[in-house]
Image (cartoon, rainbow, N blue to C red; front, top):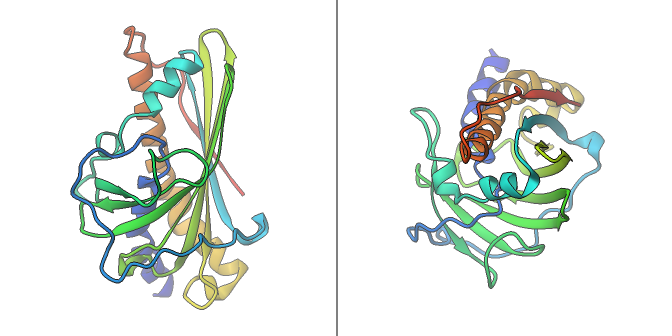
Length: 231
């Protein structure tokens, strides 16, 4: 059944959520893959051509504490599971650490594959934060339906003790590969077969990890659950 085949392909695309945190990976075991050639990131399509999902969480700490919790190295935040690879390291393609607009690196995964990531926007004030990035050049064959992904974190301190973190991930499917070659129907299949299920659950897990790290700094229990939105 074609839908079942699509769902199987999409499950392994979970590696795409492994990037998007501003902290650099400290493990050195990472290098550009064979034949790598640096090129500009893809032009981002208008929202109606992307498939997006949003998760948010309320954390019982001020923004400064939450920002510190979210800045942990990727290989500490994303260690992998029985089904999904973790992060093994990164290789900077630009000078300085990753996170400033224009910075770019290769993120290596524990299954031997890699992705390329570039920071697009980053803003930080005393009460809000915004980080937007793009991921492309997926090396795993199972990621062939995906052209690129665009991630965006928004953090807002809503009072002295609470910060809301919102994470949106948008995917552009390749127009000549199933399910993207089905147009709107293909985007729908991608959403219901993967994005709103496995991918959404992993996004909630990442946000939940940030919440635990931030709140455990003074021992307070979690105070809210995450919820997701899609379009």
